[in-house]
Image (tube, rainbow, N blue to C red; front, side):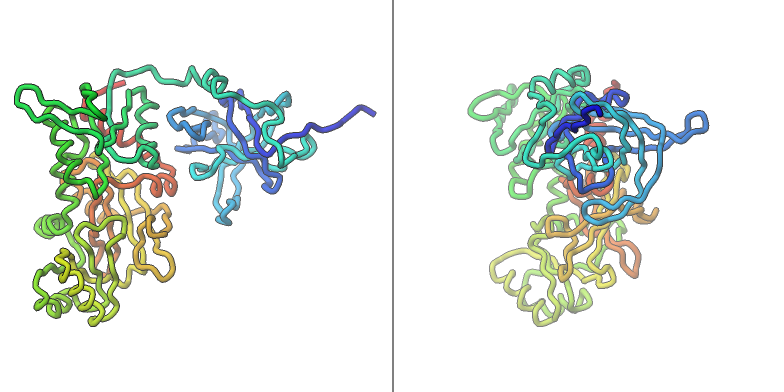
Length: 458
């Protein structure tokens, strides 16, 4: 009989899909998973010669989402598949030839969002059985690729430079949202530069104004600046945005718009003045007014917010009038400004985040607070899921962003017995929760907003 000794593969291997145009993608080898899976974004079903096909995008490199490969394939099947977290969902299945080492064979692949996963592909036991033996203690037994080899394989996918130079003005280059915006701009061929707002400084001069960076380097001209200013540096960051603006650089989200959005009292006054429905809100300085302030917002339970709170921090739920009095007076005794707001009990710890870009809601999610918690913010442990908003909620989100003059905004809405109510508007909304929950490329929408303002056409 012929020798049918199977090859050994490790717990991770490089794979190639020649038909899909994917020269190299790192896969986790998992014999515990039945089917194989491929990362896919913007999945769209269409018909070709009366047969169902699927079109999708693959970002094959985990640490470089600026490379995106457009793929098309006939649909082999549609199945209910349970994810590693135990959630069952319907997925499209395609059948394609994969090359692992020297072996090329057909496998079934379900298309899924794997943005939060460590690997862009999973090689399951249906693909492995009868072909390979898995040694979980080894990696890349079929050949490792160096960084230079990966770069060479993907060289043709790199975009030609457009000539547009865009700065991201923020504090942390490793933050998910900042990385995604840098990647999205690079993917379109723009020169993206990260500027740490706290390391930039300015020269105020009528004849020769300047912005300098890190010890004297004069910053050359940018076509646009995308500000993502954290709350603790709002004053300094907005001063820097005004300097860029005075030097003729377009700033996505102006200093005035950011300042107004960060002043929760001013923003709330603007919303109320423009007939936007909000939870009943109170503001007072003297401790003598505390009892009436509580009564004014329909009593406990009620919400107490620091004016400079963000991501759910500095927000307290007072469950009794006595507790509310104690918290309010404690804050006032240290000269801290707060808002007192009615508690919307029927929301059951849920709110809606609408992501607005250039006068359009590009994505929306429902955030659910953890058990025993009233704040639905992702940073407070809340979970996010995709949601279809009503036309009334859409109009509310767009109007709120317009009132603050924010081209990019995260608008938070709560559903009440009185209809949708506006909670707040965030001028530097995070991308991670909403991108992962919806599969939408929000960072790309932000870059497109800049392109539109600059009248850039590829």
